[in-house]
Image: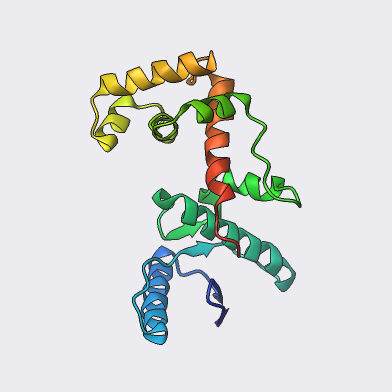
Length: 190
């Protein structure tokens, strides 16, 4: 129905949603058209999709939803290129909680302690992957091409460093949110 854009992002309005297949076609067409106009290949195009709106005064909210969905997919590649606003989880909250002066991620004591001690960058990625895979050590080990005992050893090191079980409820929530906040802080600004 309508398209307008800049070098960093574009807005496309659909009269009605034809479903994911139609959105995927638009994404492919847009990527090809952008590559043709830019004269170079375009690596990744993300389509953030808001909830449908009924009246024009809801347009600003829909724009914000689709923008957050696109930004979340930029920092969380596992979301894919075609992202519904309802599938971005905690990133919706981060958008709402952002302070006017920027993101302040100094609130998690456990995360700060762990980040300071993860010199080789082997603990935080394992922890995030473990949280993202519902605590399945086997899935994390397969994705990282490690033995399960290596994952358990890293969990033991994390437990020792923070003085708490990283898989217990409140600690898990705190660390997982801090890991996602770190991703959100480097999102593309639209």
